[in-house]
Image (cartoon, rainbow, N blue to C red; front, top):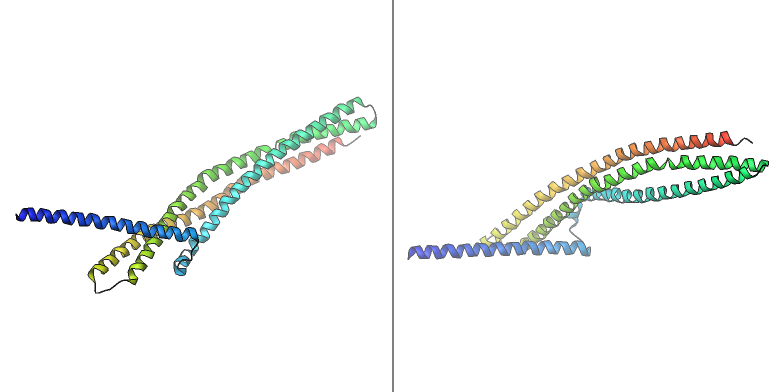
Length: 255
């Protein structure tokens, strides 16, 4: 009989433990959802909690600036290449037309048209060469955006989830604290449980917060290095183009 009672007692204890676990999970979910709603609706949060994340939020602004500028620069490079190609095609077509007309005209005007046509055709060929460093810059920027920026964004997403968990736990602890009676063991046990939840979520959030700050700093430095290298190549190509165009015009504008 005593064995049966012990087994019955153990079974009841197991069910109570499972019930408490379910209730605890539901409470965590409730406070997490409440924090999500606060964030979505833009409701004012505790100023001290917000202030403690000031450095993190500043890093996030830097990240979003890098992310947006990469997208804008990629779009600009694409438009630049398209218009450069169109300009070269139009310049070449005009040059060919002037050359043909100039060859058919034996007057001085014909010679001028022919010379100008040669200049425009040569200029068009030189201008197309500028597409190579532009294409390289676009490829490196796209790789940077797809890899480095995307990797940092993934870490930020994990951090934001941890921040919601942590702030939800803080809301839960605040709610429990308002009803806390130190003389009641059950309430103290509940408070300690929530306090443990706050500590655990804070530890996870702090780790991810540090990861985000470090990755954003590294992302900014990597972007500077990448642009310094790629733009230097573009600058050399642009100077070579301008120099080539100077000598083309200088050598052909003599009639």
